[in-house]
Length: 198
Image 1 (cartoon, rainbow, N blue to C red):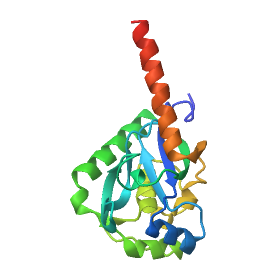
Image 2 (image 1 turned 60 degrees about the horizontal axis):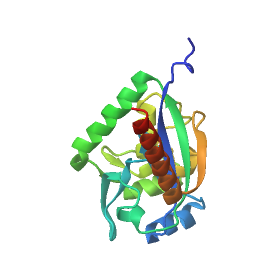
Image 3 (image 1 turned 30 degrees about the horizontal axis):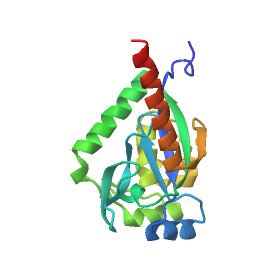
C-alpha cells in the first residue's frame, strides 16, 4: 500500500479576504489577494481554527480562536472571497492534528498574536518567538507538525504561500457564505433522505 493510498482522511485550508481595515492593509502591504488563513477538520467548515482577533470591534488582543462562519468578524460581511483546499492525511496524521487543536483550545491563554511576525513573514526573516503566531505561521506550524511537506520553515509562510502547498487540492473558489450555505443545505438534504430510509 502506498503512502498516498493510506491518506484516507482530510483537513481543509481556507484562505479568506474580509473587509476589515487590518485585512485591507495586509492586502495592500503584501500585494496578495488573501489576508487570512484558517484550518478546519471537515469540508462543512463548521469550525475554523486560526490566530485572529478576540473581539469583532478591535484587532487586538488576538490569539488562537475558533472561528464560526456567520459570527464575529466572519459575520460582518456578506461577501468574503475565499479559496478552500483539501489536504489528505493518514489516520495517524489526522489524530495528531486533532491533538494539536485540542492543545491550542485548552492552552490558548499561553499564546498571542505576533504583530512583528507580519513583518518577518513579509521580508522572509527567520524569526519565531515562543508562543506567538500570525495566522499563516500557525497553519504552517500545524501542517508541519502533522508531517505535511513544506518547502521552507513554517515561520516564513504567508497565506499566499499556503495556496501552493504540494499536497493542497483546490476544491472551491468563490464566496465563503455561499459555500457554507450550500454545504449545510446538502447535509440537511442527505440527512432527510437518510431518515426516510431508516
